[in-house]
Image (cartoon, rainbow, N blue to C red; front, side):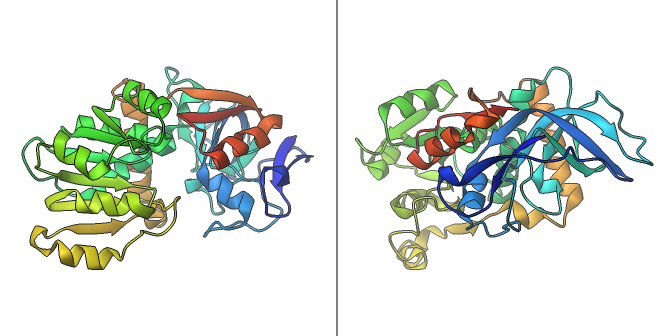
Length: 331
């Protein structure tokens, strides 16, 4: 089978297409034939060799695959060839493995996919699962007509967060760096989008919220974005940081919180790895995600389709910050 490996960490050019023997399922295992493979930021970290939960090299990146079971091992009764499934690396002992034409996984790892979900949409389900987890850890939302700030609004997780927040009754404000990405985010359902290359974020938030401030901030950028979000929170507001792709905050976060002590703000850093040992909660969130998408309460983002052999192009786009929606590869 064809697969993509990282043999030496580095840039997109270090993603190497290799021919590997077709994997065979052992007892209690199933083989999934890929129909769609998601591309995301954790894959970039594996490529660079900086992922906190780095698999040993040579490594096959890839955190999500949708396809069909085409072989089952001894003792497997709950699955049969032809079943439509999603494989998320969150269910595997070792992260990655999905940049391949097939993968063998334990029988309790896949999620069953309804027929109404296209494979290309299904690989966005882990982003929706993360959005549901982020909303859960944000806790109770306070204030009249509460607003949520979601940074990097054109990204896959942000688009899911927007929809989940709206289901919870929040008004949504997104951020973007370009007018094109702002338009994309508005099309994805954001109530407002602030183009940070043109407008002062804190001033625009105060205008939009009529000086009430934000009930919650979901930030994956870090840098000045996190500080602006923190300073824009309403009393008892919460900021949830789930990545820092633009680097560490530009000011001491605790110092800023002390300056704003009268607001009694909260900051939480979050990773889905928090639920690595809580199988019931983690899988429950995914089942909720599948139900929301299957019933069209939440829609998958627009996706750009590439071939597996074009994987370097997808990573170049990620490195350049040129991605809106979801990148998907066909095997």
